[in-house]
Length: 234
Image 1: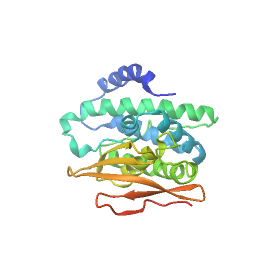
Image 2: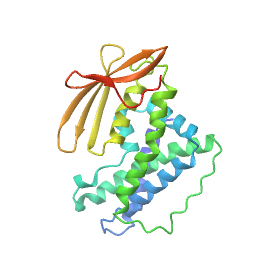
Image 3: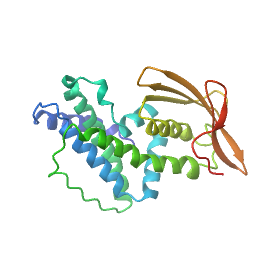
Image 4: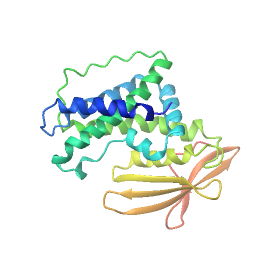
């Protein structure tokens, strides 16, 4: 199930919630929802986190995946822009919580979260963003190197491996602000454009190395050097 059907309803809810809070640029409501999303994901067992991400990544356009899984870099925004940013974050967090809740319900997992007594401040934003990366990186790696190890990148994997590579790169490197992955015209080629905080843009090509019907990811960088990427499992 995609998150699109929830968008309009929760946009209105989020706007109402923000409008009742003080305009102190604290991002407190958004950070509270970031905390809740992280806790909900942590309630799931590792195998359930894997299936949650596999289903979500497989059926969702990459630009939406980045929007729902990762948090904006605050340094790109003036404090006067935090109000609109908070609404956008709250939209995304509440919508992704619906996706996580479906998995919690399907796996009969109880998740009790009490954040009513937490006094979130702007300083907590980067910490919750860091936790998000740390929570999502292990299941992303398991999907790429274990669950999909017998599927060829941009061939028999429905494009999921290419998206995973971009997501892992983004989660590992805080200097990256955007990844643009796509499967090339030649089957088996994953092309990723990476944009960094300083404006640098790098193009990389990812290919699979096959060994005993198992595939490991290799990178052909902008200097035409080829090597294993991340930690291959053969």
